[in-house]
Image (cartoon, rainbow, N blue to C red; front, side):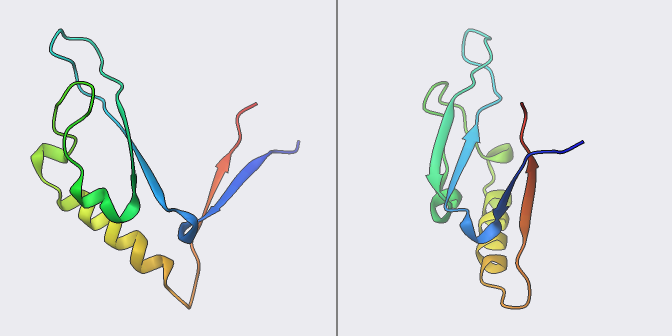
Length: 89
């Protein structure tokens, strides 16, 4: 059985999409989306829909670690990281 996959090099990542999983003021699932350049991920703030903070517990350390890790590994000369994502029919 054959499978269709998408292969994406880590160095090809330039934009990050953050999906809000919080609740709006009226208790509905928000589902807001913010797309930011990878270098600006550490400046991520509030969701444009529900205005809740998108940083994990209000702390940007995880976004900072992700942005720094991707930037550093993208420049690695010894190896390249590639994500293999199965395509859904």
